[in-house]
Image 1: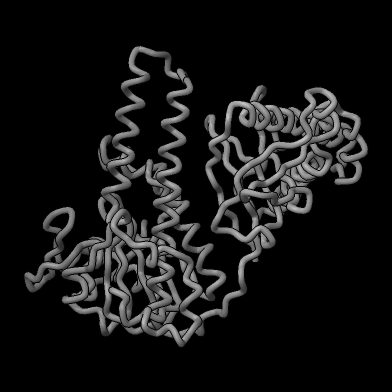
Image 2: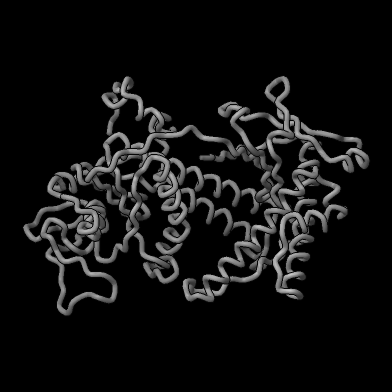
Length: 441
């Protein structure tokens, strides 16, 4: 199994010029490859193979401007995109795909593309520096045969299989693809964690073991508000499509913040499940929920800008190596139906005539049951999400009582220590049981 880590590069002016050159050449070569593949497909209905495109473009000036291994990897990525298109088209013809796929289109003219290089061509030299070679043509043109980048200190050079230069919004990242250690999968058990997502409460989680907690979302909300305010101020009086370097830097900073929030939240959820012996996660999700949402202009902006789909996908991705089962279910009426009163949970479009919940939502955060007891609305929704699939999972929710739903533990992303966020490989080691004893979970 492979992992991937991105590190922001702070290059000197000379190194930045080199990075811009090779990434721009990669973009031009990608467009040449796309043009070749499209023309062959349109004229002969044939798909180009990897060896064919290598032979066809090896004399291209953009190919020669790059290291041959990097150029070939780029061409193979283009071929793979057309292979994916062919497979998706076959599924669409069989009726297994709703929308017809489109032929891969050209990259933006004047842009920059990712440059990937196998680790065997990159050497680690003194001062923990990576020596990245350039092509012979670049050496003939500019008299430069390599450039240096710092090696990430938290990775082992011998484990890395590929290095990538990733340009994005005026910044450059060094992306390292490395081999991860094999992890022993968790044994299946009846314990389940239900997750309800939102804005102020980014993730509200209730488990069948009788525990509940909230990952606070106010930090994410604040970051988006600051970004929107700055963007609005800069674009005032400008054309709708106005863009400059300052906007690019602000957008990249905001995107980094969102990626950080997603990764920390997902890792926290997985570590919590491992520490509490939970082998199944149920995530409440309504398809195309952001397209048709109507909760007011301000609330729409706050909700839509949170990358919840990426967070869901990241949790599902981290579940796989640990053997945790990830289940996605629709979440209609989970906030309205009373969990403690065992209300019926209808789906969208299938609500029975005259259906009415036993309890009532007092405000955005509190819910009053039929006997007047107050509980957390989102914690109840997370418990009801488990109820949506209770027959499928054959799980008992007897431990989910009013006390569990009344006062869930709240965690803030900027207050978590590193031990809560790092990769949980320790859980397989029984001699480190003291970690569990000192854990707040």
